[in-house]
Image 1 (cartoon, rainbow, N blue to C red):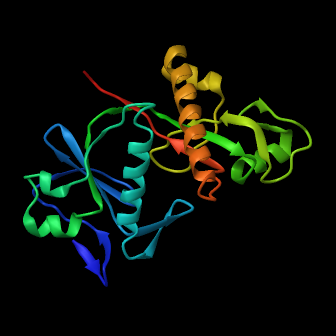
Image 2 (tube, rainbow, N blue to C red; image 1 turned 90 degrees about the horizontal axis):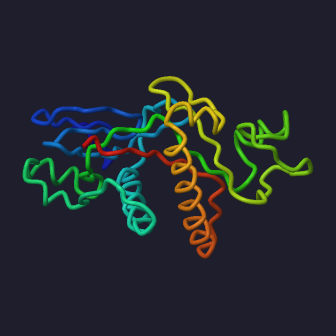
Length: 220
């Protein structure tokens, strides 16, 4: 593994099959499950920067654990364990490096839609609104200003691109990809989770302007 000054930039676990490598996370196969490892790499505007932030991966993993547990009563998720010591196929040396930044999860079939929910008019949503007063073909009031709270959270999905940039799509296009029943469930669950999480965050002085959910389904 490539680590210096407590910054983990790259993992090297030769006895596990590399399933996928993202901008920040690396995924390995363990039997029928997956090991997600959050490195300390920095990704901005779809680029990986040459330096990292010490312990960033551990912070990301702790945040993931919190939200998975917080939303579990609303929907099932793929988390099995955060305890690296419960995974006997990892060597002791690697466990010391992976501890706190890894999670064992169930392997699922990824649904190829990025489920974005917006509660405020910001970011790319603001840019689109300025042009035609809509986001993903959803009509919005004419007099909104940047960062205004929306009348209610809206579902603004995008494509899940394996390379390049994701592109916003309408709900009708989601239906074409997933079917009507699943599309409606994705929209309902995504908005439901956003509402619960954003309301909790406000009690801590944090505004969740928007968020993105990625969903999957078991192959069996």
